[in-house]
Image (cartoon, rainbow, N blue to C red; front, side, top):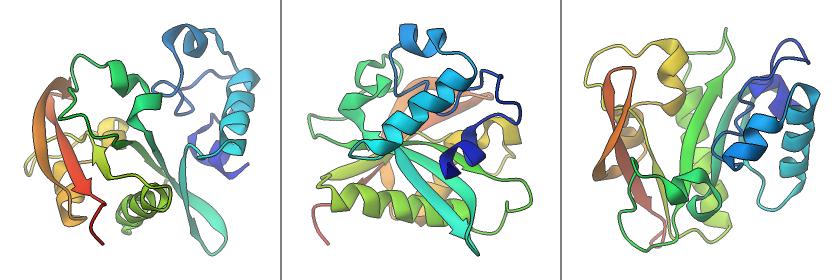
Length: 181
């Protein structure tokens, strides 16, 4: 499974995030261990809408972005990342680019792929929750949320500030309206 190659552990018995922490309730997320996590991702990938988009380079999976209706994620209940309004937005919250393929524009392609994924399924808008790091470098282990600048380059605008901080940087809500072309 291509998603597992991107977000899964090197060792099948490890219990890494697998991009499930914002998709499942806390109890289920904490209960799943090792191969059970991979199986849960397979189940999610078989559902409509799929839990994200994959970027390929010469047939090889090189990048992942998690995107889903906010109402079906933990962001629906977040106290730190507020709702901007009552619009039924989609959330774009996690990026993973395989080592050896970073700094090649794959994150930008993933953002556009996520936008199209949401648009094709009728989303009125899509929002992300990146760090607002200015020109400062973000630790690669914390770069999974991306940066404000990446979202701005993709036509997103600042919708709100949040109470969330990651790696010392404030997170913001960046939104792109999908209702008009």
